[in-house]
Length: 356
Figure 1 (tube, rainbow, N blue to C red):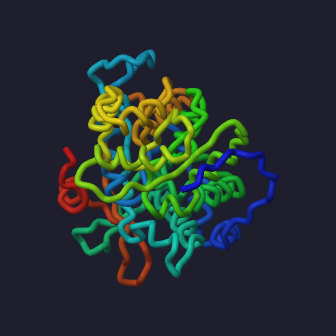
Figure 2 (figure 1 turned 90 degrees about the vertical axis):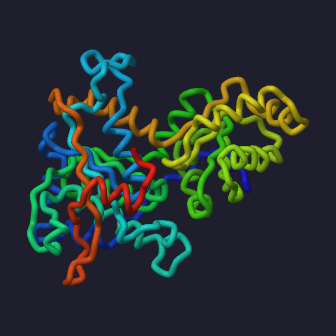
Figure 3 (figure 1 turned 120 degrees about the vertical axis):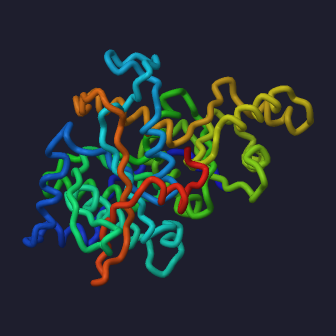
């Protein structure tokens, strides 16, 4: 494990992938999808794109969360979901999952960048297919006004290309990814030393370190660790802290790069550590600063999406429960990757049995 100090990096132009140039020069209709992206404003959908388990968990959180007053935006529950009236499109990219295969695999990270661009086209397209009819009958769906990439890998490998594509063509869809949002949130809270708990592939990709470097904060450090497999998250938390302890640095923020880790047991374990019952607990307690906080992507994306909807006046303004529709990437008989409508029961039974 290495701790990265943020240094001012020189401005180096970045080249986008060939797929982006092909779409810009396209005359068959694909370019038009990008031109119209986000164009319908409040009537558009909020698309959540990524690996199936992450998408299913995050879409569910969007559907049920009630933390804000829907009239004045105060942080006060009002018995109405915060995203009332919104259309959520959960785009489960099972065809390309897991994205970790692109980090050290033969296809390479440029292929993951292509996955992001193609996923964006699916989010902006107004056509999908019905699974019960063998993908044969096209269906209508809303185009995305906001597109959320759930995978932290696509902060570095894909988001730039999608953003560049929109700038070149004129699309107005708002793009989100958890990495930049979480780093900014921790820094805004005063964190100087940040630890990220992430899977192996994410740690190897250096995505989080690059995000910090791009913010030019010479006073901040960031380390990324992967805990050993364990039966419970409490044990994993201790392993994460143990790996960071050797740096000798205080710790202000722990970012958990996962949608499926419940932070409640972690808070409970932190309370036990603060009691200093063992020598290791005492060492951990000294390492954790007074401002120490946990951060996780679902909470950060909920907050950021809510703020964006209010600031840009993109709320649907309908007194109705949020609607979540599920779509899965699949290969058609002709070998084309298409989006197929599926059901909540299918998603629950196939990917997240614990989903309420």
